[in-house]
Image 1 (cartoon, rainbow, N blue to C red):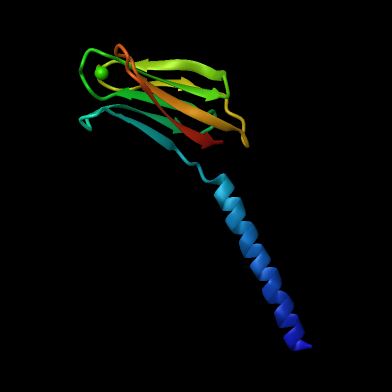
Image 2 (cartoon, helix red, strand yellow; image 1 turned 180 degrees about the horizontal axis):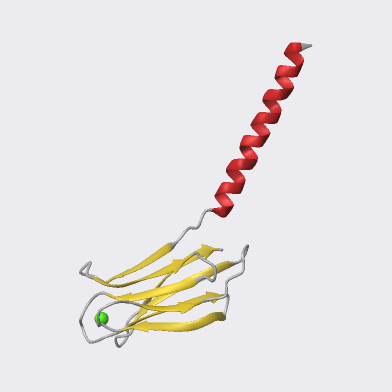
Length: 125
Ligand SMILES: [Ca+2]
């Protein structure tokens, strides 16, 4: 009888531990970074999705070359919020992006020089 109770208690505790892990994983804010390096491995800029309420993006130009960088968030072909640009002044620029939990988005960071490419990564809110 005691052994049976102990076994059942163990199962309950294991289930509770799993629940706690799942809950803390969901509640944990996870900021996502996207860096833009050129072919010489020079960092031209970066973008961060700040996983707060409301969600924000931070865009930073880190290379004084006369070109800005721009960051944006996309869900498929739909842009969420506005494009945030930053030049080579001090500090970074911010924008608010209304992201919904459970959705998958693309962070896109572009170097605004002629014929430059963009970098991107997927995030799940
Ligand atoms: Ca620049």
